[in-house]
Image 1 (cartoon, rainbow, N blue to C red):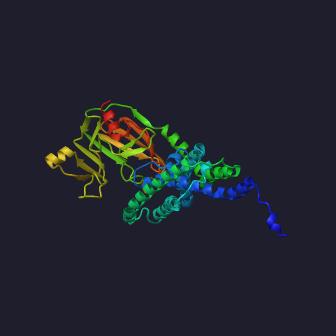
Image 2 (spheres, rainbow, N blue to C red; image 1 turned 90 degrees about the vertical axis):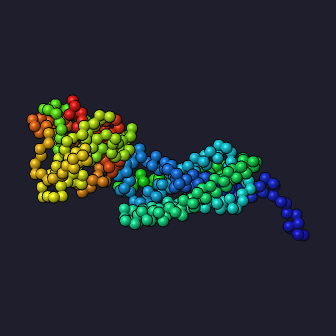
Length: 412
């Protein structure tokens, strides 16, 4: 007797269960690939348009720029991939679950669509790593501009085509999934789906929080120091000039700074919004439409007021713009000031001159003195933190403006 002749086939339910479960994880990966493809297509647009980065938006309240500079560069790369790529993909996965797409995992899926979506997010990962390496290799060097141009020329069309293809294929895939009908999602598939949505972004961002340099603690300390210095800022007017002011002298400690800082504009959060101002400068001070042009200025010799005839003398006499244009007034070296008032700039950091571009919080003070009477007319204090691109001590609109302070002190 042939045993197999009488063998009974398994019930349909059992056969369906045994055949469906092994394919569920692969189908879940298909939807993960779809979410990552859409997220990468959107992230690639930042290489073309000035769109904000999720990494910048989410990390800025928690980590200062200076603290992130202490973190290993590849930790920052992982964080960027986790926040710019995987976090939006996780949101899409949750949205897919609300739409019921995980119940439609058996919908047809053309292989070229899967390939394009995978190529989109893999390209984004490769670009993120490559650009970080280039920044580490050439950043700050003379070749940085040339390297940036060489990279940008082929990158922009590549990114444009890939982003457009990713969005197009993703929309086609979503339409196919939406039209497909399928039974309920199994418990096993639900667990795998939740793991894909939550675990990768957490693992990618977690090393930043536990970096050896403790960037979060550094940020807290820097914020406390900045806040403490900001409490000492402001403008005080102490006396009126003894007579009309027609000239001004500028001085500072050459061991601490090369020249006084210029006008700084900040936004509503106190972040740098630019340098320079619409009103005032060394040769003229102003506030709004009102301006006072000095007959001459005197200054410690630097690149905007100097006398090349005799660099041995510490100071220079420089005519006003109007006098220089109309009368061809000369520049000449002097060894002592003769101007009506003196603006003296101080900085509280001994190493500011050697590190004026990337320094942390630094307090500046401008003291205005009437040289004719010896009276201090006023004081202005403000804080600049170039490492974290912020400042405080605004005295005119959204500007930290020493010309506006001088104008107020003269006209009080």
